[in-house]
Amino acid sequence: MKKHLIIVLTMLMVLGNVTMVFADADFANQKMSDVKGTKYETAVANLITKGIISGFEDGTYRPEATITRAEACVAVTKVLKPTETQLKEAADSGFNDLKGGYTWAKASINYAAAKDIVTGYGNGRFKPSQTVSYSELVAMLINAMGYKSSELEGSWPNNYLNKATELGILNAVITDNTNLDFNEAATRGNAALIVNLAVDRIVKDEEIKDSTITDKKDKDSDSADQENRVESSGKLANYSGRAYGMILDTAKVVNKDGESVYQLEFLIGDDICYLNTDTKCNIPNPIDYDGVLYTLNVVNGVVKDIATDGKVLKAKHFEELTSGWSKVTNRNGSLISVSNGGSEEDFTAIKDASFYLATFSGGQIDGYESASLSDITKDSVIRAYDVIDDSCDLANVIIIVESKQASKIGY
Image (cartoon, rainbow, N blue to C red; front, side, top):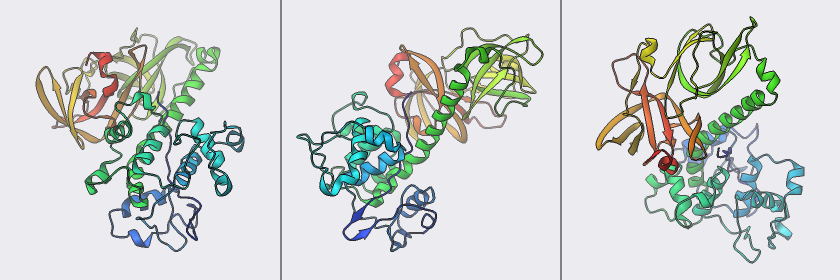
């Protein structure tokens, strides 16, 4: 599972004779006077509110100003929250141009280099005082999101720019700056636009990742404890009705009545729940990871029945909008176009749809993680479902295989 990191672009140190200010309790809500009414206002306001960026002491943001490679590197390193010990113990990057005025950045640059977030220019040079280009900024973001250059198609810098375009984090600057040269120095305004598009996805994915890791540790840390887990957990603990989501795993447990039952690790939306079955429930063996949306009949948090077609359990509404896996030919906002068997279909994802991204092991799908609409890109492969009883065929559950993984399921 690729690592996702909460990316912030807090501008650091000194430009000229004016000290830049970190986002803090007194400054975070201050509106920058020179971005009011501009295309940068919403992005800057959002990021300042979230404590991600800040402006100058005089109340300006200076959207046309540039930032250096050292400043950008230190900012990205800070969001990884390394301890002082980790910074000190990071292997020396070997850059010989960090002495003198850049000792403040050396530990962070060493750490970022060790994590493959930044690289130098050869001959031991990092060029800390050089302005960071759009391409370099994008590369830092993509590297920090867990992608490796060896996984990206093409050569520098198009490999990173193409991935960023695929992820949608360049939409604002491409739309508003059709002639933008990505080799030019990045401005603070455009940096805010780029980061603003990336941050919600990155924050959400990081929270999902942390939650998944915690749940997995709780589940796997002690097999004896797992065998004796008796209580259902999560938002479905006291739920009664139909629940739609992805079964990730099963385990044999003893319930509160001393009965041997199965417990499901069930992903529903952004939440992982552990739900006990009753003694008569038939569980899937093996679990079908082929884009199947499972329907559970739940009574007071206990699973009574399981089906891969909600109609079997008399759900009020259950319809697959795609004919099995279908390749995405285009996505314009929430309007998705797919091709299947030579025919083209269009459908719309509702605002609060649940998205699940397939994970792979040994060339096969081995589970799912929560995702978002932006994970649907051209040439990705999806299965879409409508499980809401209304008069419109709108997708409210979409299962996704990334384009780079599509060949593993025959696309």
